[in-house]
Length: 374
Image 1: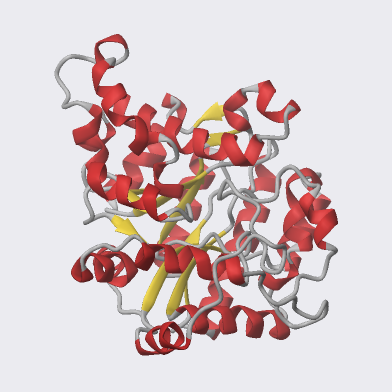
Image 2: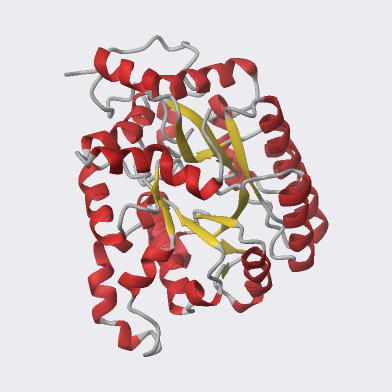
């Protein structure tokens, strides 16, 4: 059935021509370009589904983004227009009231009470420490303002001015102590270096000391593979590659044992990792010390969001990762309207046991975040 075509200027529509957006290679971190009304969407929600969403309007979305115009403009002034191009066009994600209302409408339809927002791949990472510090402080203060305005709708992950270690440690304190943020978000790569590089050990040591939540997100660099850029597969393949690569590097470096109190969230169901964990176990003699447990065991120490859209992929992840550390994610605003609903309905369509479905929709996130959804 072909979804009904929405009017071009409804509140939920983006303020840019969709065909122009689709031409951009770096559109979506979820590995699929699924925009509502673009012909790739879930089936229209039934009345029972709408009633169920209203009844269960306490779901927690741990993977959603927010792009205040003031922050994007500051990043532009520092020469980061290459990574702000798409967020500028995703106006439904900014702070204007009409766009917040559109966001709330999607959340209510999906039964989501709260979103934990982060800056996606628009990280304040510059060679200049002054620019990095200024941009990170602005982002965190703007995020905190939104959370104060809508405390039952939003929580936030703070960002840091990497690769500047001392400045990042100060911003972690500001984010967690002064602003009361839910955790810290970090890019999988920073200025060409993987986040698993020894230079960032002090950051993870501090986050572990604080028993903090760490949300790691791809930067859209394709893991340094030029072919991904020339074939325009940076986000469809490159992002899940970054996810799996980061996970495996942290396992390789024995992070679960060395930093047991830090809670690391890997997005997009861990990228390719769940599908390949048996292979990772079989070849572990080639890349891991002999003492640590195999990757399939260590992977269960991490947390994951469900951004993927495939019920079959979700079932696979549940089988190999367990279900106690999987949490709902939507990747808003890269998935909006019917595609946003698809990310939420995917959990129900996977036909998991009722108690597991509830864990993924809210209970696991409540346990991790120490909060109740609105």
